[in-house]
Image 1: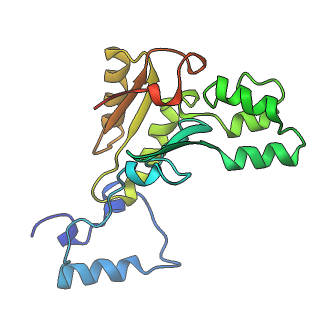
Image 2: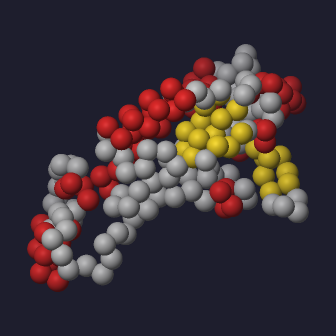
Length: 203
């Protein structure tokens, strides 16, 4: 009672996000909520699924891929997985060969230093370590009006500093995100000098 939702204000209304009634009649939904109430105050949460991502070609949440070469598996077994889309794209261009496979393993899945890989594929297959954290936060802000609970935001940074961490948390707060940071994954060396499973996780 007396909550924004009880007065017909949906999550995107709180963000002053204008939605069209062309597909869904949001005004009718607002009137129905005011008249009848709702069974659940919160419905949508975007969280990570780390256990599932170990067995599938997907990330833990909604961040970019950590690498095009991943060590996946469970406590009893593990295996090395190459990004199938990257392999397919290189095969279509006639570029996939044993040399590139070895280079991917040597660079821990980064294609940025592999000269045979075209620039457009380098842009597409950037790892999360090569994507600016501002882009990750911008995407989170764009999703936020449609998430009534919160979202698990994970940032990745080589040699993260307290100043960098503070800047990003405050940036998320200023943009209205309910969770500024769920997890920070850091590592102390470049991708070419460490293996994919040597990342340092700080929560």
